[in-house]
Image: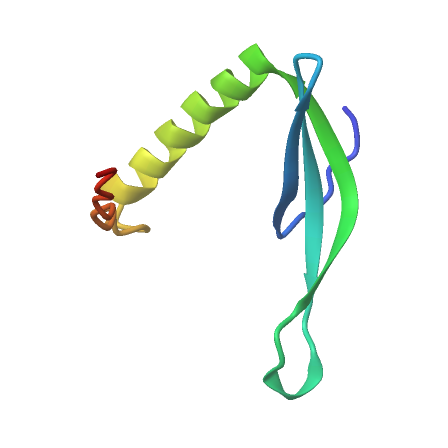
Length: 85
């Protein structure tokens, strides 16, 4: 098995030649309660089918966490209506 690293989130997502690349980021706390700084710590490259499978797996995980009461699902805010007239 390959090494596993912890990331606080994804900083950048790009699609080039059918390959999706995610830049992983790490957040570093700042003194005095200032906004944490983010730095790139690595990247993941996946095919589009792999991204779709990952989305399906994460959606299933989120649903399980909602069912267990770990997460509370909120309604998405209504999108503003833009009149093109």
